[in-house]
Structure formats: structure tokens, C-alpha cells
Length: 437
Image (cartoon, rainbow, N blue to C red; front, side):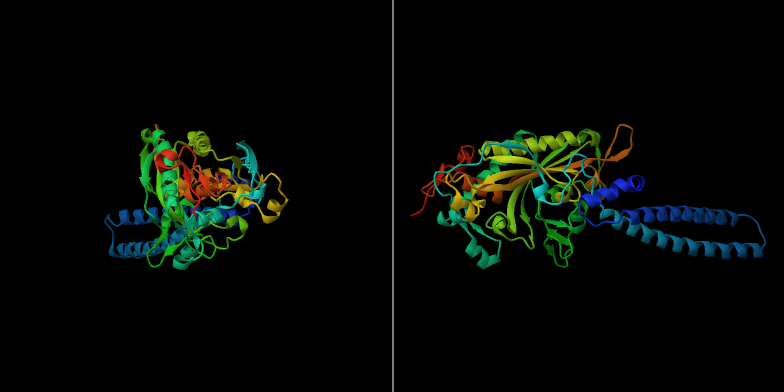
């Protein structure tokens, strides 16, 4: 969350930022409640001083009538203090709730726009894959090769669930180990994180555990949720702690299952593995000094680029527009891989060279500055002895299901087989998934 004083001092900029992000939040209410809190706090301190003065006066010699008067005054002051404390507590609760609805400020260079079509392409690596034959999408490939089973996933668990089978199992494990090995060499501490987190941790990270618009599975009567990303569990790891400056930066890598309701997601671009209720992901997370977060944001992006360059997957980098940013993000880079299977039927029918497809997001990395640290109360002790909020960043190393899409669709062969990226072969023990008879 933003600092209260920052909201008061930069009210117009905060309101414009809310508008740029197409979010609903009341910055004016924060200003009003902040002033009310300060007023009540000052009045409460005055009453507490009066209580102390009354208690001191009671220690002196006096007539009984004077003592009785002081006793009555003491009772009155006590009641006033109790009432003021209750009112202050309520105002502070409302202030916190309103402030939490306000998104982080967006980077000045982040594109202003409402949705992903307004994102700005800043880099492209490789060229869209060309075929001399009509390519298939990953759904048809996975089913024909008997490595993905959507039908029985739906029968057993519901829509947007799936089974991986045969070589598909080893492909997931190979992608996981490939990413973890790269991160370990770069000094990331590897974790396998819990798949469940307390609601207050999700709220601290910036996820909404409740409500019809929530993308989160809550566990009834537990006060916990299934995590949608290891960002939640890695970000909550040091909640409520003050870290020595010498510990920073901290680079963590977390492997977890991810659970997302994906309510309302439909359409040709969301089919198959692209948007599912459960998948595995390797997540990067960084705790650092405020002055270093810009540098580490570029670093996380470079790691993502290295991972997908190593797989030989064509991709582009986009600067995410304000309306497509999550509330905690100051700036976000997305990597979008070329996915030939995202071609529509009309595009396929008109294509001569079968240079078909579209870009699909495979990773993202966000600099959340001190927004999450304030909500989770994570600080570091600076050289001046003061405790200050650190900065927190996250980035996807590899979301396994979407990486599988990119591999299957870009490496497919005319006979229906799939060549494997050379970087994965040492982990797989085979270099091709052969077409089944």
C-alpha cells in the first residue's frame, strides 16, 4: 500500500493513477480519514495527559471532598479515553481498508491504456516459426501423441483440468529442472513452497481472497486459500520481520502448484493448457534495497529471456500498460512466446506459407517497490539504525503449462512428432516425442 502521507501530499497524482489503471478507489476518503485519525490521536493524547495529571494530584494531601472530586473526574476521563480509543480504532480500520484499495503508483514510462492491446512491444527475439505444412495446436498434438488428456481431466475434476501422460510427464519435469538449474547457478535459493497460505498473506501480497471477482480458491472455515503463485508464499516468508541490511538482496526461487479459478475465461485463445485451474510454476522473488529495485527488475527480465532463448522459442517483450497492471505493480514486463496454434481457422485457410499464430504470455516480472512490504510489514535496518521498508519484486521463471504449449507448437514436425529443444534433452533422455500409431 502507499504511505498515507504520500497520498495526502500527492492527491492529484494518486487520483490520476487510479484513473489510469481503471480501478475503483477513493483517495479523498483516505485524506479525510487520515486527518480524522490525527485529530483523534491528538485529542486522545490530551486526555491521557489529563489522566496522568489527575493520578498525580491524587497522591497529594487534600480534603475528602477534593479527593472525591478527583475520583469522579478520573472516572469521567477514563470513560472519555475508552470512547476515544474505540473511535480511533474504527477510524484506523476504515483508513487501512480504504488505503489498501489504492493501487501502487505506475512507472512514468509505463504505457497508458486499458487492456493488453495497449501494451508496448519493446523487444523481439527470434522470428515466428514457419511451417511447410498446416500446423496443429497443442490440444490436437497432445491428444494425438497421448501425452495430454483433457477429457478425463474434465470427467474427474471438472473443466480446465487435465492429465499429463507418458512423455508429457517428463517434459514437465525437464522444464522444471532446466529452470531451477539456471536459477541455482545465479545464486537463487531454491524452495518448494506450501500450496496453501493464510488470507492475510494473500491480502498483503495484493490478492483478493474473497468476492465474486476473486480468482482465488478459499478453503472453507480455514481462513486459508490455495495459492495462485509462489509469489504469495515467497513474499510472505519474511512477513512481520526486520532484516539486517547485510542480508539484502535476497534472491529466492519457488516451485509450487498454482490454483486459479479463472472465472469467465473462455475463447479460442484460452483453450487447452493456456488457461487452466491448476498448473506448476517456478517463480523468482527478490527482496532488495529501494535504490536497487529498478536494477533487479531488469535482471529478472534478463533471466526470463535467457530461459526462453535457451529453449529456442521465439518471443517478444512488452511493457505492460497501466490498465493491465496488477494493483501492487509499479512496472511489469511480459514475455510473450510465439504460439502457432493460436491461429484462427480463417488465418489458416488463407495462409500459403503457414506462418501463422499469435503471441501468448508465458512469463511476467513486476517491480512492486515497497507496496507489498508495507502491507506485510517487512523492513530492513538501515545504516542509520532506522527500520525502513524494503522493495519486493517477482518474476516467472517458467509456467510449465504455457511452456509446454510453446514447445509442442513450435517444435512440431509434419509427421505429427515433436522434436525436443536441445537444452531439455539431457533432462529428458530422449530428443523426440514420436507420433503414435
